[in-house]
Length: 85
Length: 289
Image 1 (cartoon, rainbow over the protein chains, first blue to last red):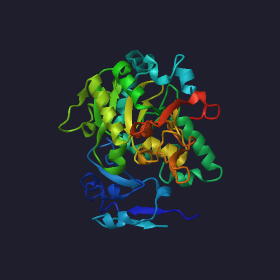
Image 2: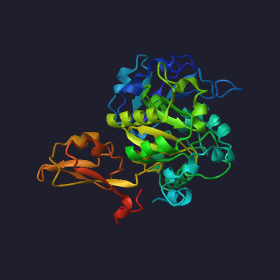
Image 3: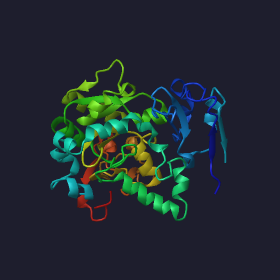
Image 4: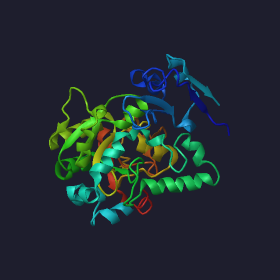
């Protein structure tokens, strides 16, 4: 069985790592029919406060439900998503 | 009645036991601090590693030969945890049950603890990026959520009266969403949600991975073959894929093993052909939640 891999380039997406703020975009979340992506607060941005509600990122979580439709790759304005399977 | 009715139902259904809504119970479990810690970063619940394993690619992990079984067992144990030293960064003891709209209104009008608030659905916000005012929270949880600005709806009333909250639930039900009542954590009840697959975190884990985050209702739907006209309206309303149309019989068939008993098809049927039957009355479906 081949596993789906979705790689997000966090230098383009995610405001903790130098990309855009995912709360303003979220195009991939909206086009994905099986809702594979999850938008959440970024981890461990600062040592003293691991959950800063200013910093967000997107992680593909439910990879086994991905249907390889490729809509997220086309929809991403930053061209940050790659899907391999 | 399910195991949770036996444990926390006081002789009835667990969600109709007034003790589970009380402030005394919340105080005895020290829930204010627990829920504040949990809701501060609740979106991270799937990404956070639990015993070195996160939910990323959960479907693949559950299919692994032995590890998958252990993972399923530990996930079920976590979801239904009644331990006193629960970890607030996981969804310990947070599970729910589908209820028909009339029981949701009964809870809203009689049992839910004040204050009652409406807020953005967290599941829809984290998985679709859509801000949708539909979740009704009450008791301790509403005071916790009111401190978190990202869940507070703009240009809408946040605190609701009992009738208003019941009207919101009915409106969401009419839109085609499944009404669910939630333990958070067991046995304290503090939320009634209007869920929609596949964005809902609870329905996702139940329907795609078979984990018991959402139990089926105490009812199941049954179609009256004489009254059904074959208009197929109910099929569009079912979130669980339990209804199909038979061209030979010119009526719909309900797969009762898939039916969650939410009552959406019954409310949509223009011919009153569908009714909800208590699960306990059926010898096969009894105990299958």
